[in-house]
Image (cartoon, rainbow, N blue to C red; front, side, top):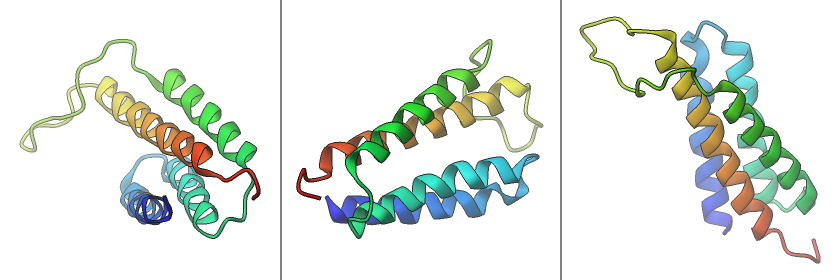
Length: 114
């Protein structure tokens, strides 16, 4: 479970780096940064189980809140501009959903004696 947490933490740090060109980078660097921090805290066994559960619920709530009014996919052709804001909202929502799933997995992985 520790390798999963470490690799997930590295991937979230990469996501933080990729957010710097976003229109609202402060929000998404914080979102992915907290998820990455949680992964490393799991790796070093610093946080109790309940923190992962709370974060998972918050991220799932964020994913539901960000879901676009009309789903148009998450991809667009590189030669054309993004067709609508729905694509960006879908990407953000799915990113938060992925974080919620990983945090849930980590919540199950915390030993009760930690």
